[in-house]
Image (cartoon, helix red, strand yellow):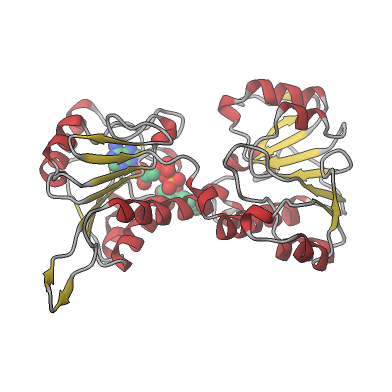
Length: 365
Ligand code: NAD
């Protein structure tokens, strides 16, 4: 099979879908790899490294490919250049990109959305939402720390003793747990809250305190959160209002699949915080956990910096690409049978991921 790796063209995207290590492994499995010149440059992977790994460097890795591997969805022009009957694997934002999916269907492309890798043990090594959330959780703490006017760790120096900063993480999923671990490594006193009580032990095992709110539990299907009932919401708000006013750094990561991000940090909470404190809102692109978050910007509210970073994984492109590449490589190794990617609807992994096949957008996309 000819696997194409184009250079990403979305603004600000610095990742690449396959890194040279994956190229070498897929070559060994008998595939031809077509890599667009410069595809890995922004992530730190040179054309020479791809050539050494066995790739053919090209000016067009889309039109000749049987399978195109990308990070971001293709631009319309790129979708139009795909070979009829070829396959595509990428983040496709399936709920919000109907025109793209219809364009792919018109070209009879079979498209797999990396957002839809099932959260099962078998598919764990293909789970790009998790790998990229790990990057985002780590980077969120570094961004927040770099804006804070204080140290995170406790320091005992000849110039006096510095008290450690207090960091609070809201939402202890994949990104949140990585944010907790990172803030701990930097020496902050860390606490966390999640509506799923099962994460309490994971939070504590990372050395953070779990903020308890009486009678709040909102675990829905598949281990995800669901929306809180009104009385639970009120209890959470009261408890977090008491907690947040003493925090220096707040990282919010709360999401509910298929819903706008829950509003957790209110304007009144921001007003109660010390001037110079920082909120990093990782849910900025899905509506924001913090009142007043502006996606892609840092705004000041009541003397608090509210950061709404967009596409954080692209800001750490070397390792984000390495992890994403392993996810894609594992999917290809899993889905290719007898040298070709033949779609079967009842496959437990490829089935749920497939959003376009047979000239049609599949139901639920
Ligand atoms: P996510 O990005 O959907 O949400 C992040 C966190 O926000 C979740 O922990 C959620 O409970 C929390 N949250 C939602 N509303 C909240 C609120 N109002 N206040 C506070 N917190 C709130 O989650 P995710 O990181 O994608 O992980 C979701 C689940 O999937 C977890 O149970 C995780 O362990 C599981 N998971 C399983 C696998 C696997 O088995 N392969 C892989 C990754 C994640």
